[in-house]
Length: 443
Image (cartoon, rainbow, N blue to C red; front, top):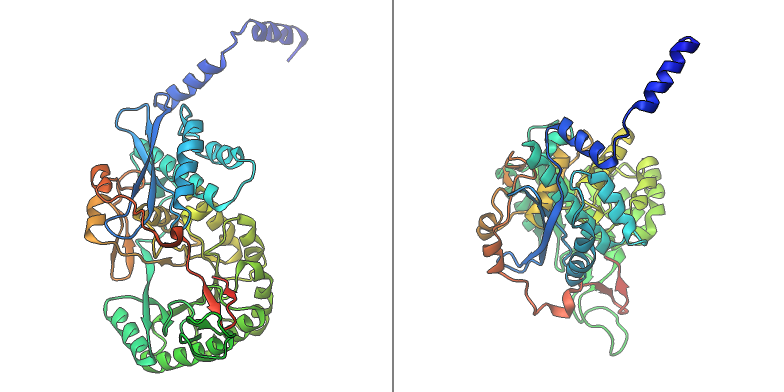
């Protein structure tokens, strides 16, 4: 370009009209073929689900008639705190914002509280995030998994739950699951639920005078009992079923290492939460002595708890709950982190969890090469009526509805017929186990 051409070009630039920011935004919207969109209203929907659930959902209502999104803020133990955080803090801040800007809203909502990554705030983030993805999918006329890259598998494999008060009952449970088409089966054992096989009965064992008299957990008993149970189960059912076991963080470091070592011959699909989050450095020791696969993270809330375990390849499965880590956005990022390190996802979606959270995990699972397995969760018929389009599990596989967005809805009138119960024991606190001396055992 010569001097004269440059002079004319400069004059043309100066003469060009300045496009206001609002007009620029409108131009982008016209180019996309969609009118501007805002969040006009929001509501918190709570329900017992016709049982003992403590479910909290967020409904975001947009400026486009009939367009709204649903998200889960599932927290069974601090339910009222989550409800208040949604109603008093998130919703007033969210009204008027553009729901298409999911990544921006996620980050803004995370930093809005200044202290971030706490469990309650993560529940709030998750509800918002799922609802935003639901809106985006509905507006695009696509299931959320299509927006995440599309299916990489035909359905989502899940694992079943079985238990037994003795070895024969454990075998019978596994055989029943196999007959129903389950390939992956988690096996728990004995009295007391989690930690079963490691409890002294109430009133038994040497205890302090006048002290705790209930079921008492003993690490050494547990480490001796569980490997023998799985050896017996394998001797009866063989190695075709892929078996799992959940320790629920009950063991200290050296006992966790020893349990993992003793279970190596039975070839578990994974050993879940053998250590508490406070003791994760011990996973390095486990890797040195055995190849028992490790699934970790059910009670994690901060992403940097998981980061070193994944990048150092100290675990095999990330075991987070989608509603506990920040929703679809956070779960997809976690799956993307896991993929190059050969770690798989195994999202925790059982127990008191809800269908919205389950299906949010499904959309990440079915679109991610880093998927490993998902926990099953069956809901009673009233829940399927209350939340039409919720996932269906058939012969060990979870199927979504393939409708746009998350693919489900909530019948608010039916949900209101089953309000949250107010007679929750101990304010809804999680029940902790204790040792013979009365001290708390970490869950």
